[in-house]
Image 1 (spheres, rainbow, N blue to C red):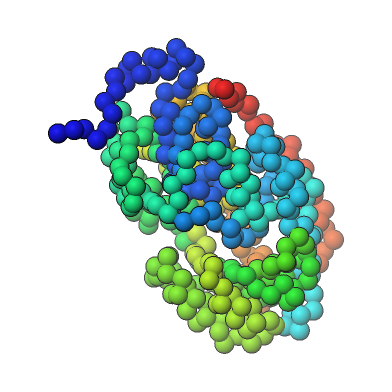
Image 2: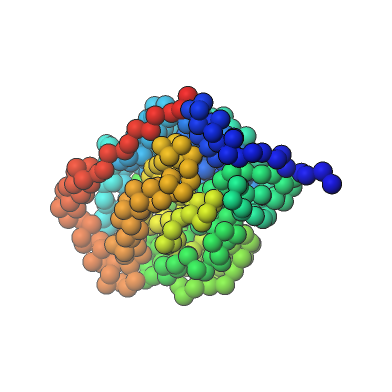
Length: 412
């Protein structure tokens, strides 16, 4: 019977590649074509590897919320040559304001940071796609993986089975790769007592360049109004015990949010909810984090939210994805493709930043106070001039303590 895979003398193969200055384990499959996956594919290709990306969506995803490119992530984007474009597409949001039921601003917080840039997730992913010339299998996903000493045999929903040297899951908090290689989701995903949703809404409802938030105890309705985009986003966050639902069932998601906010006629909640429920790209999920003792298992590794989701409350998803993907590709290059060395090094150098960004307690209390008293205290503190000074000091301290981003010399 004919073997479906090419038979290779791997010792001779690796010796040949080493003699030519090329890395071993060059064929790498990446699951997920968002920020982490595309960044990883870009840098792997520049280091001489041959990455392939598989993405469940039929085309590049264009939606999403605003994400921050800050600190070391700015360096990553600059080295990719797209920082000028990122700045052109910046959201230009000035800050957050908290309002009462009559839409009067009771407090404002200026969140602008000259050292960082906020951009819509879909815009950033599109830029990454433009500068990443690799094979992408859209409209498909992994159904099985079998590891052995020489590689990984991968089966897909639609494409024929293929052989890869390594597999990386960059497929989000509900990672399919993580489930297949590490175990069920409940072992790694930690629920943080809240759920959130966002969708497109009428931009005329919000103040230009501000994120407007209205609170009742345990709930927040918000409106994100970019200065450079015609479309606004409606946000909903609510405190809850853990719920049972299918994370892919958008109809169920809309029903859950309607049950929580549907009877609330205060502020503009009803208008925002009606618009959000009409959006086919309505997004809903748990406020949760992924915590793992290791981001690799043999020839399979994880990056981005699949490995360490810090939750939207951290404001660090894009930063961690960009820096983590850059480091993973770089460590593989530095190790000549030896995944055993590279995966351990990647974990060691990136985990301190992840641990720091997963500390989100204060952010959740700021956005969604549990009680009316907590809301009043939040508004009082937010009005203090000291808040802006504290933010500036924190940014300076972070910049001073930031670890330098290493230069990984491309193989070609």
